[in-house]
Image 1 (cartoon, rainbow, N blue to C red):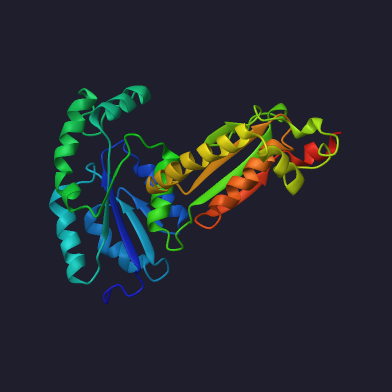
Image 2: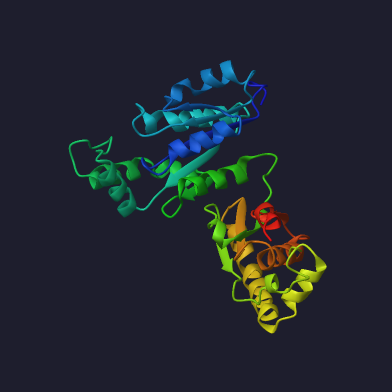
Length: 290
């Protein structure tokens, strides 16, 4: 990038209004990009010239409300390409029916057709953006994505350090409440409880004695086998979808024996293939109880 020597990366974001540009900009800001929203394309070279020496990564959001969007944007992009600056074009899309619902829920009119039904403005905008969509390097369909899921995808793709896919295995006791931040929950209270074995009661599922007792029961071994088979299928799907972490929780009555056993054993099974963390949420409570 001879003409803009300090510039390392330029992201140009566009797409349908209501498809998540604000979330995308916040995500790039979290990654350390200098972010500018609704910048007229003709000012892009000046922005790069001024900013690139102090902020080498720039993300710019441009939409159809910007004057001369179609006429000027690709002229500027082509000129940047000739100067050895190769912007990454990111397009955000969402199905029409979802956009209409979002406009109705927020009681906002479409910026391109403020006096008409939202679908009129959506159709006009989609037509104006057709050229950008065709040239985009990355396209995210946010129809079924929650804001955090969109953010996770951006962080996964554009973070140079590449956030590893992490699987968090958690144990807990139902009597202390169900955790809120979990993706998968498995209730292991159907397994025979070591609590009623006097010599095992003071121990936890982190010990070999408790683990051996829990897994000595046929239903525990059958459940473990089915559980591993299911997670072998699910975890790669979560990773493929762009999630950066998954929380798998096991619950028993007090969070001391059965749930810890399964969190420990399943965590050990996947430790060689994934970045794995194991948390025993209620261990402190459990060890104080008699």
